[in-house]
Image 1 (spheres, each protein chain N blue to C red):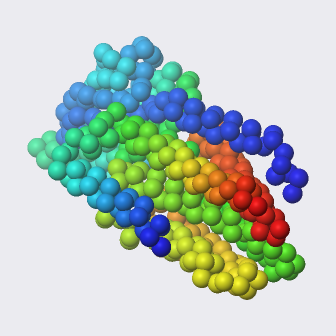
Image 2: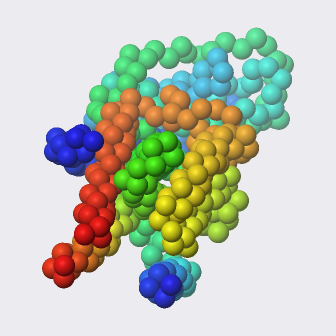
Image 3: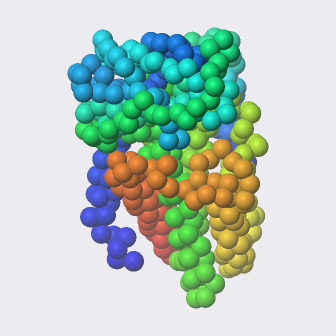
Length: 73
Length: 356
């Protein structure tokens, strides 16, 4: 269970600090709203690519486990 | 099954996704009217209105352009148009002394037409107030012009300009296919769960669970991208995230599939686990469809295409967007299939190792 909660709690903490910063200074939102909010589109693309990248890492970790099994048997 | 081992559709998936990302970022948004000032005028005055365009070609198109105000079948054309910049023009209107009908004020749309951009407009742009001092007896009003539309469509390929959305209209190619892919891969999982219940073949169970796994990934991506987009298009995240029907439906759907994963983890016996989770999956998918497609249509939500009217009407998607949106959906859907097949093949190898 700890394995699952560690990354989740990390993400929540990260999100909270991000939100707190956004409320303190308006600079981050100003950038996002500039040029017809094109940076929102960039942000969405980054989220998708990052998500796929992390998923690939998880798949690779699983694959390494199987490889270990083959080598042991 | 042999289909999963073929390469051509994986390459096609990559090509389609790259195409959608490239075209989705490359084509401009517009033309549109971004702002006008002043936007409140009085009857009987001659007024020069400053018009700010968005990716328009006011200057380039030269003299062959027209601006007019429109309300139902009542038109009011600009007399004198000057364009100093592609996105900046001034138009002089001679507002008549009386208004048609019994109105005290009328809100006009402002329409622009030129050879390059075609016809585009700003809805509810100008309010004309009745000037009391120049009150005249109402007479049958005649239009001072009948605007001629020579070119209706923009010469360039572009995405429609929408206030509130602006450039983020491009997110349609990235956020929406996430949910399409999720629904597709959950449908695959549903089919394999039924197949398992009919045949009791453990391989079908593995396919079902791996499909759900990929489905959850795409659901989470849909959530993350949607909350970023909505934070800027709909206002602060907290105001709508847990009060919008469609989002709540998606959240409950996602939680059901989390429950599916946890349920599987809690049953030791392999045969029992496969059977119980297959039954759970069948119900979960049906409920998921209800939550995400049926319930949002019965109530109000912020998402377009809900609250009674079908999505993807001509108002949501124009033809340029269709040419990028459908390839994007096809690309991402095959991507989910590819990811699932990789995971399934890994699990098959693992099972063979365990049997030895």
